Image (cartoon, rainbow, N blue to C red; front, side, top):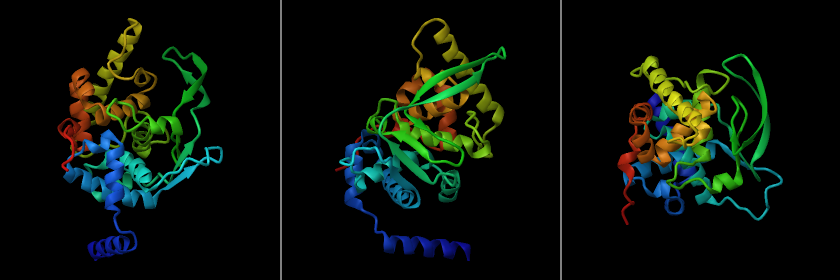
Amino acid sequence: MLERLKRWRAARFEARHPFPAAEWHEARARLPLLAALPDEAAERLGHRAWHFAHAKRLSRHPELDASIDFDVPARLAIAAQGCLLTLGWDEATHREAFAGLHEILIVPDAFHRRVEEMDEFGVMHEYDDERAGETSHQGPVVVAYPDLMASGALDGFNVVIHELAHKLDMANSLDADGFPPLPADMAARDWHRVFTAVWDDLQAHLARGEATPIDDYAASHPGECFAVSCETFFAAPEALDAAYPELYALLGRYFRLDPLSWRSPPSA
C-alpha cells in the first residue's frame, strides 16, 4: 500500500511538474562540477534536484540587486549542488536527511558574526567571523551571493555543499560537531580516528606556519573540518585523495559515491 502511494505521488508530481530537460542541460553546462558527472548519475541528480527545488524555498534578501534573476537552470544548479551530498543514498534517506531544511536564503554579501569559543585550556575567546554562509538547526541555510556565484567549479570551494553538509551534521545534535549520523555499516570509532588524524595534521601545518593540504578553515572547528572535507570530496576529489586518502575513502563509504570516477565530460 505504501509503495503504491509513493508511486502515485511521484506520478502526480511528474504530471504537474514535467522534468525540464533543456533547463537541466543548461544548468550542467554552466557548472563544471555538474558537467563532470556521468550521464546516468546526472539524470538521477537532475530529477532529485527538480523535486528538491519544489520542496524547498529559494529566497532572495530584499537588499539583493533586483536585476539578479534566478531562472530555472540557476535554481536547478543550486538544488543539484546540495543534492550531490545525498546522490548515493536512496530516496527515503535523502528526504530524511534534508527534512530540517526548508529554505535557502541568498544574501547580497558575506556577513559577520560575533563568535565566542573556549580553547582547550578553558580560556574563552571572542572574535568577529566573516562568513560566506550560515546554517542553524531549524532556520534557513544562508549563503552570500558572491560565494554562490564562485561555487560550482572544480577547485574545492562550494558554499552550497558546505552549508548543507552542516545540515547533515546537525541531524543528531543541535550544533554541527563534525559527527553526523552514520549508516549501520560504519563504525563511529573509525570516523573519529580518521577525522582526528586529519585535524591533528591540519593543526600541525598551522603550527609550523605551512599551508594546509585543504582549506585551513577546516582547522577552525570540528564541524568546519567535516564541511570543508565534504566540499573538497566533491569539488576537488583528487586533492583530498592525495592529501588524506583514508579520509577520501571514509567519505566515499559515507556518501556511497566515488567522485574521482566522474572526471570525464558528459556525452554529446
